[in-house]
Length: 499
Ligand code: ZN
Image (cartoon, rainbow, N blue to C red):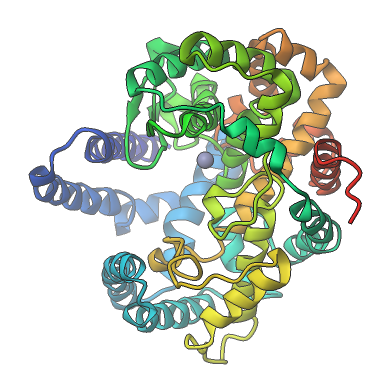
């Protein structure tokens, strides 16, 4: 294992340098510095690639006597084999680099197409991305539905069967319910909104600090900066950084961005040193499990009735806006018809994701049928009309809104909704151990952090979502918690739901 550990040490160093450069690019670097940074990144990326992908290392890795390794070493070897060799090695190198070049062109084409609302600038790239991805699935091989290969890339262990069951529930239970809620008159919320006013960025920064303290983020091990789109990054568990974006005319945006990112950040800070120091098992588990943590803090804590006392107190003190706990609860839980996924409320969010799932699943159902990209915008719009009762009238509000497909991130979307469902299931399990609402009301977020650390966070990347759910909830993934949670919560808020 000595040579493996040496390579891991180098991998961690390359990653550290590259993540720090990306962080700089997003938060502080000036416009003219981009070229220099990109060049350095290119060099480091090549070194990082060659560090594992070379004959000598491969020989070493595949000649190890697995039975003589301890559990962590076994896991390390498994992850390197899967991530570095098995996925990529079956795709011919020329085709892979051609695809990489296609993606970078497609990404800039998508940006312009979205800005100018011109789907025709992007659709040929989209077709090529879909067709190449199909070809790669054939190279890699598959059992069952071909789309499961892509789902597993982003959420280990996730397949079409599980997703179908999950989204069937959403379609059957949540869609009719959400449509009823959307018909309700929201005049009360409009009145509450009249109380809001512009708040200078300096004051909003005080709010961020107050929330950081409340959630018990360790400031000796990271800090908050600003960027266009909020995100979290980490170099190790002692250096976890996150960002927010301040809008003078929208006080809730910063509050909920900060709480969301704090969920990601607390996760990273709580990974055990055992995994963090010397292995590639540092960092959170899958993307869905990470989103489960961020959405736990944002929604299950931050939009919980029990949190309104803390929040209204802070809004009064720092912003001099007087909102009762009831008013604030209505305001942060407003359900709206809208086109954009990332702005969606908690109730309609999984429906936005389901629409993308239906489209992707159909495209990858049969690898030999060519996708008709001319028909996709209409398909997208039809589904929005069917499930949310609205029809986008521009491409930018419809099919061009998300960047994922331009970067060939296909199979990524479901993890967002699955993550939210994990969060509800984890909440229910936590509640069996202690009264979570009381902890929130008493601002005892430490107790919540502690539970999550013990059951999930400390294991880093060493366990898959399935194992983590077993540890935290003592059962497999069960979407019922999520559906019930959403229905109960919004039934209470929106009353009897008569037509
Ligand atoms: Zn997130």
